[in-house]
Image (cartoon, rainbow, N blue to C red; front, side, top):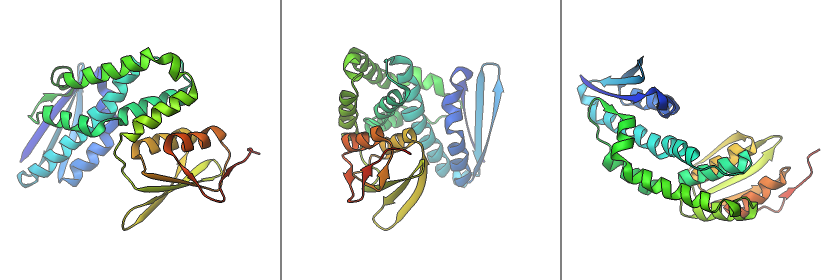
Length: 250
């Protein structure tokens, strides 16, 4: 039997709770089980599996924790550092773009600094072993704060987001988007297959596009949100189909 445990202070419980569903799926897929318990000011998590599944479960746990630091923790950290007079949509868009920026290099830094020893403290790892990341994030936050007067202008903000996304490695070559009522139908094109699903709301669509950073984006049909339409073109360099246009919402 192989067992691995870690803990996190309740103050940062959202770091772990945000990834808990994915963590549970990956641990189960690796042939393991897990449980967590709250004691005083900390949450203790323990995962176990048969010895022959040790490598698979260790890799699954490490992947989850790397994702946690690179996304959830980074977002939480930048949100507390960056205070800008932007509307909620623009503010979230900027934060998610900053989280996606340089994610491959940051994942490597986290991987090298993350010791998979039984009983590790997730908050302790962040404060004492990931100082390089915190320094990088402090610099990002300071740049955003120093240039707040420019980022208030939406055209300038869109250009910055466009620049940052250009440095994000794309997860897919091509996406097609069309609006269906208040939802957005997304069709992704992979080398040997396609996938399709609906996204509710303009903000969720933009956040999804930032995360996946498609190399090519195509718009089809009618769009009722002019602001979204312009951002898709300016930020993601979206190509318009012959039938694509903005219409007034009735």
